[in-house]
Image 1 (cartoon, rainbow, N blue to C red):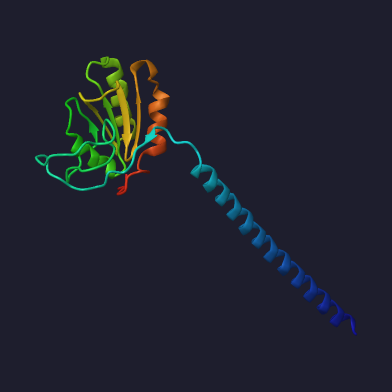
Image 2 (spheres, rainbow, N blue to C red):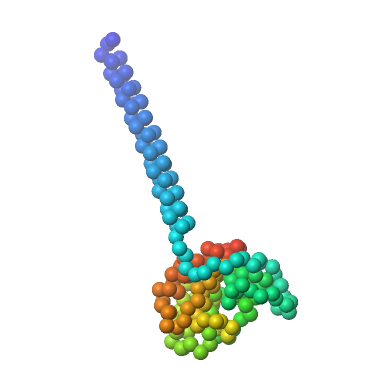
Length: 187
């Protein structure tokens, strides 16, 4: 074989070698990336989320006048509710549970507090609505059996004033806002 032909054969071999190496590097990157994403999915799927889970009581729309059956949590986290949600934000008067359940259906967080807690704490709770804007409602609720209740669709965390911390409320909102409602809306 002449020298020129030998160089062509060597270059072709070298080209095939680098082509194979490139393909294997791409395959390895895809496999490693896929494994990373899958493992992150598994680790997040099994992590403990805040609050207590309650059975889903459905999404039926009802009127305010219709009699309601008992809800399985206080405040309710699912079940029959009004056809229209309340605007997101802060309220100083209570709103009907049936209206706020609709907000939960759309991925919202309902922060309710028993009237009579300190004004300072009420302002802290209201601050979360301002911080997160969309998808958070803060309102008093006379029927609460705890000082403070954080609710999303089928999940509830309740605690006393003595157990309050900004981090606890912030974690609940960050981890669950727009994640549990059966009809989440864009934020």
